[in-house]
Length: 86
Image (cartoon, rainbow, N blue to C red; front, side, top):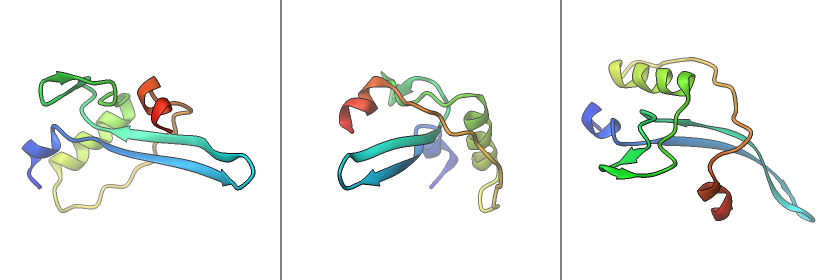
């Protein structure tokens, strides 16, 4: 995958707790992307990386083939579109 393709991608990692009786509970997550609010020149609400997520995404794009280690704080919620899906 080239850097140009990654500029228009987003990686979302979410952590869930599953309880048989109550269902799934969102514990937190991160979104790594450019934080532009746009995908293929169209407005979207999931391209919303915050500062540290954006910094790590750019670091990975600039260092292809090299392992990048860091720690990201989990967000306690995403946008309303994500909430409607789950």
